[in-house]
Image (cartoon, rainbow, N blue to C red; front, side, top):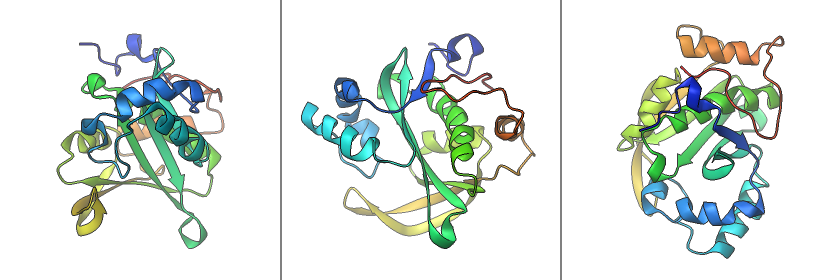
Length: 206
């Protein structure tokens, strides 16, 4: 099985804005109940619904990117900054097609996304993720990236009609106690050689 945390494979993964031409690929992974199980939105059931999602949700989102493998959409990652007195933080979410689980793709995508998004939202100093207690795979991804588990939020929110317990994870660019965080700080530094592109690849995978 290929692992996209490997430098030799990482160049195949890129992030870019969604396009209407992604509708067929979005329908493929977005119609899978395994993929959408922990997402707030329900599985997509038609190509028209996929097109509507791209035009009305993905394109209008402050920072949502298609995770692409050889430029074919296999998931998404988003960073949504809050506003007003809460503009210092942003919420991250992501999903990957089931056929690509266990390959390090979500980890690679988030490692690319967080530095790029924080460059666009300079007031954000805290990135957080809410993860359902049963979503062990997502928790492992966050821990690999240097997120810290802050605590359990009991009966915190509804998902798919049921009230759920969530875990709160957070990442601070000022944290330098892990190799991952040091790498992300290098990406955020003014001297960083990482260039803005519509489709970009990570310079290093841990």
